[in-house]
Length: 144
Image (cartoon, rainbow, N blue to C red; front, side):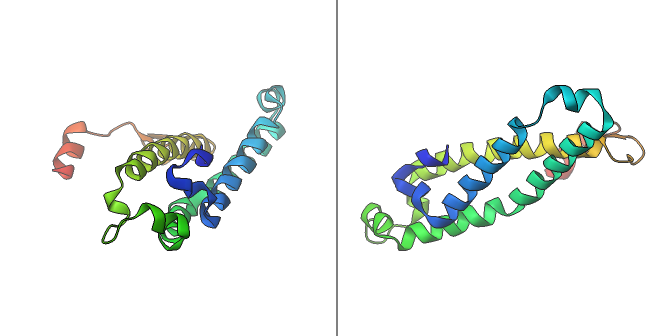
């Protein structure tokens, strides 16, 4: 997906790094034998370790994307796109692209985080990342 970033953003070195992280992570996940994971604890532990490595590897994705956007601003491609006095906040295509990218990233991190937490000793009233005593009312009031 990062290959399709608007204005050639996918060619920036930091964005390419992030793309390589995603490619490596994808290869690691699809290389696991699903039957091995489901049939024995050793396979399940290897898969959990792989997911933990992926989770850690991607912790700096936001910083790397920000660095890639900075690189873009200083590049010839960025200068060609940005008119005098403009900055990246003036390009809605970039906003909508990265909104989708980060929304997808959040979903993936929640799923991996939940899976990893399911393999830890849970705090009271928790199943994975889910607190069974969460009050929607209290959350809404705290957010207001």
